[in-house]
Length: 282
Image 1 (cartoon, rainbow, N blue to C red):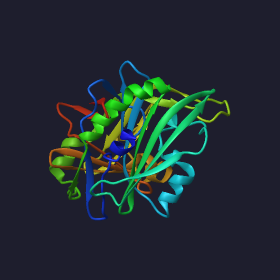
Image 2 (spheres, helix red, strand yellow; image 1 turned 60 degrees about the vertical axis):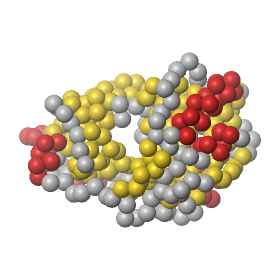
Image 3 (tube, one colour; image 1 turned 120 degrees about the horizontal axis):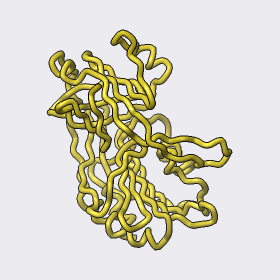
């Protein structure tokens, strides 16, 4: 199982006092999409994709949870498996910096068609990341395997110190409301797991000068030029957080209960690019 062995390269380590970044070169025959969290790549000429979900803290026995549920709720809604055809095949992989790496190979049964998937859980300290590769048909999976192997061979993990707190100059340079167009997941009223579709919608990021951030679809009102970040965090913690600028990069952390981390280039000439979506300062 060459793919199983090489997918073990999708690994990063983490400890409480530092952060880790997974560096890799995506395959040349893919395009990056903005669907869901993390980094998503779809292959040209074949019905296959791979998603890399960043590290996030966990509590409890996550290895046991993965073997029981495949951590399906960590996967973006449109990419979640509907049904698993038979028990998954679990394996182990090793990579420097990871405490434990568990792989799961399984077939998703969608409307009677077998869709091959390989999911990997990477555990380091009290954080975990997931890499999820899938294909629409066994034929597409076979086509994708060499490209996934090549991608895996470029992987490396870099441990860095936590970013420094925001300073006044950097905060004022970033502060403002930015708007872009991003696919929005629209659930249907049909009671079928995984039912829904993506639709382009206005998407906003609002940054305060003192390091607060909030994001929202469709509209983001700032009456009188003011916005209550504390109230936003109470009603929508998932999309509220903090940011800083360090090393020429914008570091965003959302959702204090289950942190989502985003790293992007700092805005330039009123334009900010986050996960391949271009946002314009309003």
